[in-house]
Amino acid sequence: MKSAEKRIGNYHTHTMRCGHAAGSDEDYVLAAIEAGWKVLGFSDHAPWPYRSGYTNLGVRMTTDMLKEYCASVRALQEKYKGRIRIYLGLECEYFPAYMDWLREQKEKLGLDFLIFGNHFEDSDEDGIYYGAAPLKEHALSYCKNALLGMETGLFSYFAHPDLFLMNYPVFDETAKQVSETICRRALELHIPLEYNLQGQRLEERGKAKGVGYPKRDFWEIAGKVGNEVIIGMDAHSPDALIDSERYNRAMEELRRLGVKQIFELPGLGE
Image (cartoon, rainbow, N blue to C red; front, side, top):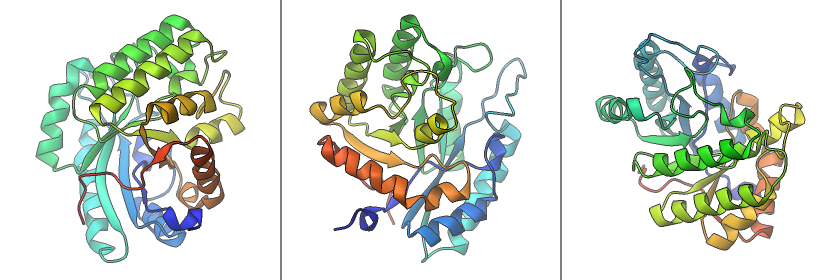
């Protein structure tokens, strides 16, 4: 079977509401259909009800955008029913102060899934951005947050689990320890890991100042541990969904590393 024939589902799709993506919601759907995806999951960055009133418009939507986001995706589900399966989700942090709110919103809004994107420590209001953090103490903080986030039971998979390597200078013993700890705990919790292709685009644009991600050293460990892995396009523009060459290269890389790949998220029906 050719690699392209296994391209079933992408669950990591953003919208322009996050402030760093482009294209209408429908543009993403049309691009996914053109590229032959059978499943498209929208998972824009979750808003948070910051108690201080803080907003981060270049990173995530505000809470008052959430209902419209949900309504837009649900309308597209109906419009394109029979042509592509569309699911409604969010990419979320582990922010301890707001996890009860997130649980409530998942139920209230009927979200199909949540993915875990561990970008910030505690809050993006004043916390470390792990993608720009070069120190060992940052990597260890990332690991601690990653475990706590996975242990909430809220998330269908862990997006870019090697994000901490983006600005980390070298894959040293600390990086290896963090990677092994994350992979082993994800396996214990039956949480798939995401091989994220946005990291490659960032590196190509000179945004990664360290090891970068996805990093082979991390995925060799995931292969040895036996993690389930799903490729995520992490689409910030409709064109990203049509990038079949990048997707096929990723599949071949994971195959060479002996990684167990999955192509659809468990628990999401027709």
